[in-house]
Length: 292
Image (cartoon, rainbow, N blue to C red; front, side, top):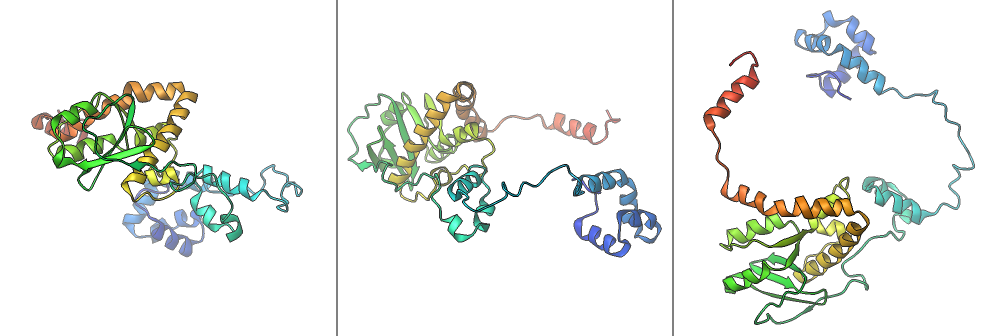
């Protein structure tokens, strides 16, 4: 509801306490501070529209079905699952404790069905035959060529040939644009041929989801790098399945969103040229359309 521009909640409450109703406020504009009265007068239409929108309809044609309203025998798992699906986190916390503790469909990194990756020594050569997970943390590059093993090495010890090898694979990572920036800060120049950005894919699959952090996608914290990489594999699998069911979303990801990542990184990293004189002129014109 828009309310009256320039009149905040605190002022509105004070006016209603003094004049009781919205009509009472507008009947007493002469008794209100001139600056506030002027704003009220200018926003009168919005004020009454907001009042109308905010009204509770007590005569809505809804019949109460007492049998349907009976909570005895309620499937608590289903209630919690629905609240979780639509991300009503605050409502879940307000449920009785026994309802908060029901089993909810969530994926945790330490669940038995999530594979724990085996850490192996850094190979002499990277043989890339498909998708691979790439993650950097604390100056180390973590690479997983499959969902069974993971290896890592300080970035300072890697030569250029290794980065060229990565460019031939489909790199799975979380927020690839940030990954590019982090590598650039370490003086690493690389351009992955194909990517699967877990963060961007999470938006495409469910744009209404508020928290798209990897921890939220997995349902638990992932502090250890090896677990983080395992989590990326798990979410990648889930998102790949989602793409199969939504081919149009997959097309948007692979034709537009993913390929644009490197271009956006380059724009942010190098910057873009602007015509300051033209921008100054446009600023004046937009501030006052009558000026040329």
